[in-house]
Length: 120
Image 1 (cartoon, rainbow, N blue to C red):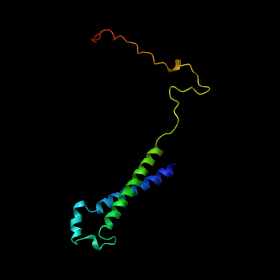
Image 2 (cartoon, one colour; image 1 turned 45 degrees about the vertical axis):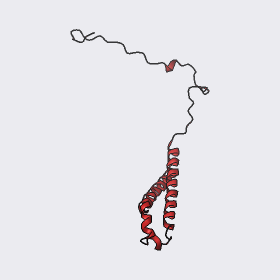
Image 3 (tube, helix red, strand yellow; image 1 turned 90 degrees about the vertical axis):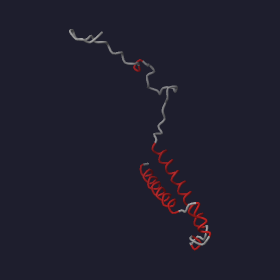
Image 4 (cartoon, rainbow, N blue to C red; image 1 turned 180 degrees about the vertical axis):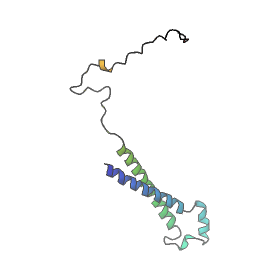
């Protein structure tokens, strides 16, 4: 299972770097007016609005991959052993005597040495 965690961590790092890069490349909402007057992306490979749709979709897909890899790493990292709990029946061979689970005896008071100034 360690190899699966390693693969998921690599996928998580790659998707995180991809999301960061795509968010930095995208233009803000206010940049649409500048592109409408001919300064910008109308000559790009995706057309006037195709690049923003492509970048937005790719960012969303990479964000979903990042989220799923994070959940998968978290699931693989937890301990899934079955805990018997306090209300379940004890397993065979387990003593039902609870005297061994008793609290330890309280600490006995010790008298201070003679001649000390410690109040009683």
